[in-house]
Amino acid sequence: MENIIQIITVYAIPVLFAITLHEAAHGYVAKHFGDTTAYVAGRITLNPVKHIDPIGTVAVPLVILFASGLAGAPPMLFGWARPVPVDIGSLRQPKRDMIFVAAAGPAANLLMAILWLLVWRALHFFEVQEPFFIYMATAGIQINLILMALNLLPVPPLDGGRIVTGLLPHRASYAFSRLEPYGLFIVLFLLLTGTLGLFLTPFLQLGSAVLRMFS
Figure (tube, rainbow, N blue to C red):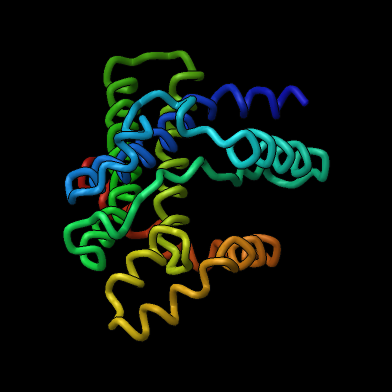
């Protein structure tokens, strides 16, 4: 139990920053391309309360974390935030612009992973001995890389699925988008069968390669 509480304490701030900037980035880019839906709804904000989903951001991650701890398995985190509303029809060039709107979230997470890496390096440079801050910076890197990789999975309604939908020809795009109601079940199936990591690996390797440029 004590170990789980320590994990929650270390990961809480990085997770809140990760989901907040991820969702706000979607709304900001959508506004840039002509859709003010998220802006009018007050979702282009760094206030995490606006983006928290009581079930996906709080309940589900805590249940999975406690269940993995009780089972003696490595701690696991899985959840989601409230999706930023986007009116595709309000975008100037809906099919093309949605690619950039979708890509904004993972891009924000990659940027945050870089920033957390710089914090980690600064802590070592100034010889800060407090382990809590080192662990938090490390968690910030890990959380943002995982969130980036997870959202880049080519499964709608994840961002990767939106990107693929925008890149495909119209007929194929429409057929592919019909997978959206089953997207969450597909991801849960991959998670429960232990194969999710296999699909995340290429995106994690890409993110790690970018981070090495700042090492």
